Image (cartoon, rainbow, N blue to C red; front, side):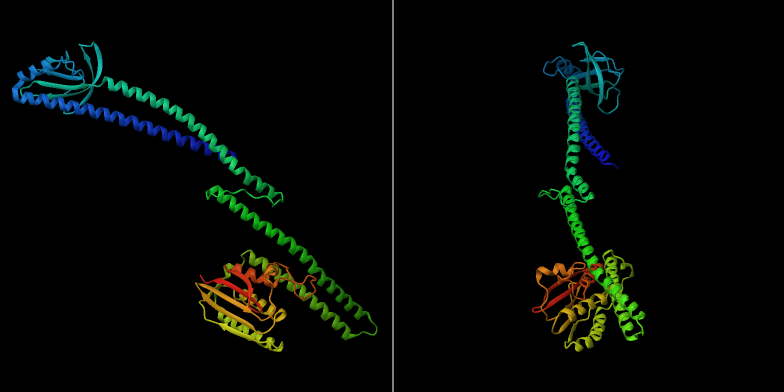
Length: 453
């Protein structure tokens, strides 16, 4: 569906909705007016009939004929219709010269058209016929010609009002469509600019929380995330180019030394083995860098969730304490475990162990003092913490440390490649959690917060 067709459909929907609403209102008003007029007329007919029947019950047919003869010509009852007829419907006395053909002996009020000899006009009326015990017939009714003219005027006015309402609905539909296009024009322009590589524009959002404001907020948030990702990609690409250049250069130099050692006369095996070992180390370092970057990309893409199984995190941490304990002792340091039992965590055991191993490796390389590996549970959130007693990382440098290929060594001469903490953060996100760096006072506290549900 194109934007134009959507706008047209919106305008048509607004127009049809308003016209239908106006039509229903006017039709309902007309129907209610007619019902009210007919109800009042029927009540008057019944009242007139009941009065004449009381006269008949008291004075008989002669008294009824006398009463009708007196009341029919009265000017104060110009709308009342009274007629007494014999058993063959021949008029005896009353306002009409003949019995109306539309009126039978049914016990209900009937709408009919009568001819009034006094006025010489045909008029609309509401009539009811009553058969008297002696065989005569009584006809009572009310002339509603005036009411019918009023109802016709109301119907004409309703039609005119409907036409005006249709014009207003058309104007409202056009204005709504224009407003719809105008409100969306800025988000569309921002997205077009982003498609062409310009991520600096943002949608202007007011203080409201309607659908358009939410759309603007979400577009801005998406562009913020995309801008950050593009900047991280640029920095990561630059850092990757720099970091790959060094091991590749060293690998090439080591291979050159291997070749040189192999061509020396006489052949020097120790020199060749040392050069080959150096080349192997550089190749392993390069392979580890590529594998770590690939693991981060897979984790950030959510690959691996389908292989989640219940993981005993306490057992994983206990194994790591056992593995790294001797290494810490060799470095003149120690490892302390503060691990509480926790419900099984849905995840990948290998990735979780690798993430915590990266934290322990960092503490061994860059930290000092005792390393503490702790686990706690609060509000269905599992927290795994690795802390040391070194100098830590300043608060304003933690974002750099978490960035891909982000290294706190400006000269980039240290052995790290800046992917360890990025991998930990990616593993945390893969498991639906988050990774944070804090101050252990002294030292660095690295915490994985993973939901158990």
